[in-house]
Image (cartoon, rainbow, N blue to C red; front, side, top):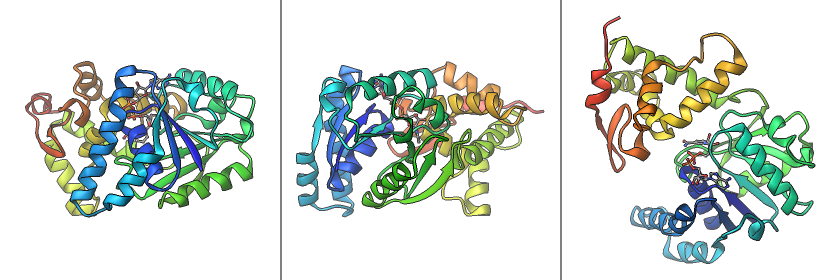
Amino acid sequence: MRVLVVGAGVMGRGIAGLCALSGHETLVFDADPDAQRHVRPSIEASWARALERGKIGAEAIEAGRRRLRIVERLRDGADVDFVLEAVPEALDLKRLVFGELDDHCPDRTILASNTSSLSITRIGRATGRRDRVVGIHFFNPVAAMPLVEVVRGSETSSETVERALELVASLGKEAVRVNDSPGFATSRLGLALGLEAMRMVEEGVARPEDIDKAMELGYGHRMGPLKTSDLVGLDVRLAIAETLAAELSGERFAPPAILKKLVAEGKIGKKSGEGFYRWDGDEARPSASSASNRTRA
Ligand code: NAD
């Protein structure tokens, strides 16, 4: 298959790297020229790490390299079977990008969004092909996480869902099917836990590292809710919380002050080097600043 990945940040690069390794001709577009320049080196560096760990072979990397192409303009990458969009989590931006894709892509192209929480139906309504718009929601880090949520908007056709499931299977991932609803299955449940953990840090109930350890060792979670939030990006978590707070009503998803404060300070987790933890590569160390935010309730 031929795919175009739009938006080459944390997720887009992971998705593009996976598609190219899985045998798909993969085009990548990012609106930021700086990001465009970094896509290939960043994907190749992640492949090199996977090679060192014995996860992939040198021939697979060589083939992946040949299948990967960075395009400078969206329309240069439009002649594809699938678009996988991974621009920032903002409805207006996604609708703008989907409108543009609809103008440039041929009729056969299915437009998929990696949104974690926004309405697939509303994104689809920015296009003249609402039946061929679907959610294909990957998890971070894309190469390692086995799950993909396939989200059916109210106007998505059964054929589009089937094609999305086929694409997901071709990437070696497991799909769950979810109907369009704020936060789908995963973001809604994951965020409920993450926000409560943040409120517990605010209230001085326990340190971030102890809250995470409690869920890891006590409940068998692979990673605690605060480390997960740092990995996802606190900016992304805040955007999702705001969407869910507006759409699911009530206080459940209102973003805690500590989350807003860390984002305002640019401490957005692993990608900025600090969030609830200090990050050194893949390693998380306790952070002084989230400790200083602790107040006794
Ligand atoms: P990011 O900020 O790391 O990357 C977004 C990229 O999109 C940037 O490189 C930016 O330059 C580019 N961009 C912005 N406007 C664009 C446009 N008009 N056209 C093309 N490129 C544009 O964001 P991310 O963390 O990769 O998240 C992307 C999407 O994936 C969001 O919808 C997010 O909710 C979702 N998601 C994120 C995670 C996560 O853990 N970060 C997990 C699952 C899903």
